[in-house]
Image (tube, rainbow, N blue to C red; front, top):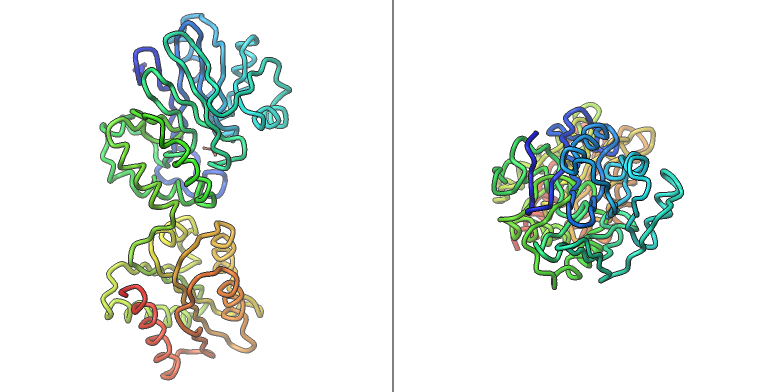
Length: 395
Ligand code: FEO
């Protein structure tokens, strides 16, 4: 097998998952995902994170091929989510004298998921671990993406092992380093990974970026996606943009519609946005497009106009699911418009307005609600809503 090295004695051990359809059993990954672990073969041997359990056999075999019988001394646990800790038990069984390296939150997770750890080394911010000619330094970055999450910085080669931070959906199809692949091909998967998985924790990501800023980083080895050694600014600037809720001047229009009346309102709104000069308009049927992609575009664009028909006196369920996720993600600093239709009592717009009241976004106009099919008066109100949104987007 090819051995991929980050430095003389530092190896990439990564595996491509093209079988899983839903990451975390929620998020579609049509382009797959990679799970990346790293091995430092020095006087002392250290693994940095492990891999998803489906790859345990390959992983153990690849470690053997490098170490040729030498034991692993340390398992550094940057992150305990099972896509990275899945081989932890297998590693401990194979190397019973191994020391698990983590922070005060890590070992509780080890015990609750796998086993009571035997040999542990608890680190704090700025703690170091000498391996020989390489030395690791640790920094905790809580909630990027779990409470125990930390990073490991290899001082000799200036490599940051960053856990989920700077990761990506998408398998590594031959190219492993950022300069071996076409980044444009990965950009959507990198953003969708961020917005779907880490997006709830933007303030924590900002704190992590600031905390790590003093480090002289020449390479980033994340637990998913490419290893960054040439275009570090490319990914760092994007993470900074996304985690500060910085958006582009476009509008996402989402609707839930049973028989097309709410959809017709969405079409009118979208057309008027275009007439007003908005170029990036993304219209989604909440029943057709998975929320993973819609959330991603909500992070990307400043405007969000959402419409729902009434369904059993409530919001249309697929719109409700999306709105619940938007609330859960805590997305900030957007412009909002609301519309919808009903047959008798309503429930779509009424419940969307509860979201409008609680989300803290700028509601650009009164909501537009039609009874039954779209008629002239509410057609004009849809035009007005689109104009109000366009005014603020173009201001
Ligand atoms: Fe890739 Fe939070 O695990």
